[in-house]
Length: 325
Image 1 (cartoon, rainbow, N blue to C red):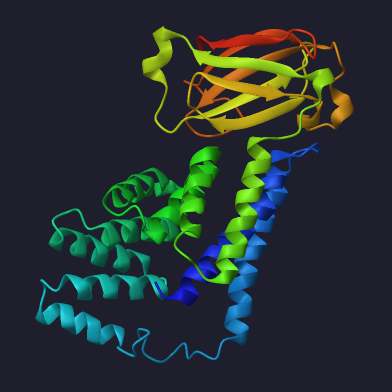
Image 2 (cartoon, one colour):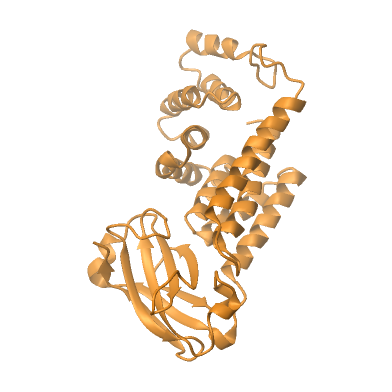
């Protein structure tokens, strides 16, 4: 991928995260998933529209690589020498650049086969083509490819970037932070460095949110031994604060599913405003493991709950010991 494309993709996707994540998290206000999706769509569509309107590129001329070689010439090169791994990699990247993701995936797969099935550039490229061409439907497979690529090449910018995005989407903020930090060490362009630094700062605020001591709810979340084997790979942990009388959640925290895990919430996490939870108020804390990474419960989710007096009960335990029918 050329430096321009890396920068454009990084900045566009980081912009989506910067706008959408606060809307999804709430930050003391009601969560707005529809607005988050709309904002993400506008950013992506708007970026594409501006580029099409302002670009001087000819969209009818033969697609060429940065070196001026046409895609058809690369195809011919691979036809003449089907064992030319470098040509397959170059062709795959150019297919990605012109948004021919299915063709890119096939070319990367061929390069990976020529590399003995362990080519980090090809594996990362396959993951990228899957994500860009199929969205979240193939995210799990793409994630596995990025992890394989990083085991072979811990400095792969593509694998670091996309695996960081997937980690954020799954609520695995510590992993996302480590991947974005590793990208900074690769000396990216200044515009990308600025965006990454801002995203890391956002993650730090999410990992260490401000706490209101008067309404602190301090819990250790763990799963019952009988259910530990049923925790799905890549699960997301949601911790909800609910009014025992019913109604929408008063607060929620989305986290990675590493257990046991220490979690602190307070009135500052409330989606209905900081006055929605009062000091000494009795609430119900619910911890739920979701395979689908959705705040709404699904059949097969694992959960547990306990009663808690905000700011009064000290550090307590929430044991996940039930299964949603």
